[in-house]
Amino acid sequence: MIEPSIRPLAAVLVSALAIPVILSLKSRPNVREGVTLLVAGSKLAIVGSMVPGVLSGTVYVTEIADFGAGLSLGLRADALGVLFGLLASLLWVVTSFYSIGYMRGLSEHAQTRYFASFAASVSTAIGVAFGANLLTLFVFYELLTVSTYPLVTHDETDEARAAGRKYLTYTFGGGVAVLGGTLLVYFLTGTTAFTPGGIAGLATADPTLAKAAFALLAAGFGVKAALMPAHSWLPDAMVAPTPVSGLLHAVAVVKSGVFGIARLVLDVFGTDLMRELGVALPLAAVAAFTLLVASVIALRQDNLKRRLAYSTISQLSYIVLGLALLEGNALIGGLLHIPAHAFMKLTLFFCAGAIHVETHTDDISDMAGIGRRMPLTMAAFAVAAAGMAGIPLVAGFVSKWYLVIGALEGGQTVFAAALLVSGILNIAYFWPIVYQAYFETPDHHDEKPLISGLLGGSEAVRPDGGEGREEPVPDADGAVETDDADESVPDPAHVDHLGKFDEDHEHHGGPPAGGWDHRGWRGGESTWFMLGPILTAATLSLALGIAPRLAVFLRIVEAVVGGLPGVMG
Image (cartoon, rainbow, N blue to C red; front, side, top):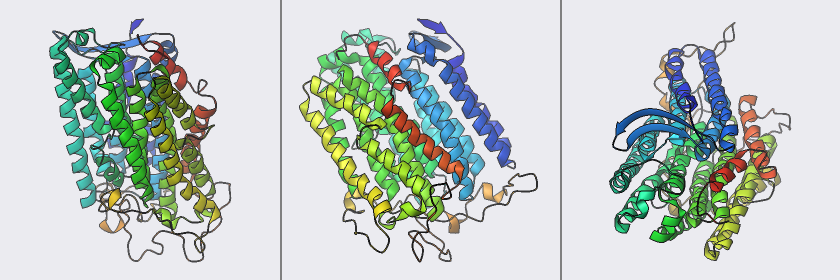
């Protein structure tokens, strides 16, 4: 049932309209962060209000502009869109709290620009989620690139600018491919509107041109989905602050890529036409190749954030593979892995950021015994890592179970084997981190043989690591004043995302002299602005693993797949 509604547009605009307000509060950071949290909560409430209707079959539609001849701009909150929109809005709330602790913990420069860019990025991500057709999706897809660029280049160093240029080159290149595919679909069918089961006109179009349209769209969305070989922008983008790496590179940006592929498979071409054209198998093969090779490269990364980045590349391909298998259970597994991966990977990135803020430690080889210093953080890390490997009771097990079952039901044993091998590789690159954190000490630990090397890519860009400036002191009213110079230009001696430290700093990462001190399990390891989001994200990972239907997301995914014609499973 189609229901005209302002809610999809309101979900997009609520954070966009907050941008000038956030910018105007540059000298009042406490109020600025309060506005950020209020707006994040409002966005979540708007998106959440559409969940009951979507589960009962309602599609909320906002018409923006009609250009005639089958071209229009509009928003459509269907089950697939709400899946992505609910995820992005929920995790923006969590990440907003974390950002306050992280940015203040490091006395970061340009915090106002950071929070404004975050609001813009989440606004465009919701636009991607609720785009009613390929044209609207393309517009927000490109706006997402523009709005996230300031976050990628936040440090304003040569390394950050190089990563930003690479990010723009890859993602704008992907955008050109999406535009080309959109124009070709319109040429073949006279419409770009999403239709469950696929646009009917493509079934009668010239097969060669239809395949070309699919290839352009899959390649364009595949850039942000980090499918190999268009993946190398993602590890280099880890130069950004950890909250950016967490939300934008575990949720909004990369998930916009796999979401675009989901729209392509389910609502543009449809499973039946993809089988007929023979385009599903090549897509599945690229995904399987990516998830295996990225896992192998992750083994060789000593820097924690780079290991997590290559893990992300691998895990995104689980989603693409599930979509390409075209079977009911595989589709459920692929779509469910969107929130599952987001909860787990956000936990892992949050943990990496907390370790960096509190100990200036970024390399895995320096983390032996760190479980004494940060017990809650490493416990959350262990939970999320177990889920990434597919261990039961965590979100990753449920989605990967559906994926493997779907592959076997479709007779695709080789892809089921690839999923199982990747799970083993996940254990191989996560378990040593957890083991040495709790069961080794700085004086008695094994040297890890799998460290950064040429196979892992360029070492020129070093994510996270460094020191912040002196933390500002609150005034009598509790406000923290931020100096104008502090808001604009970083002090080169204090840039903190590139593994660099001031030579006069007392601690350059790794355990201090005498080893890690023991902080206990009561939260003394960090501020609750950081610990709270870490534990929340880990709890969401467990909730989705233990009671996936109660966590809503599985019910939404089942509504998506159940509404598709011709899907078996």
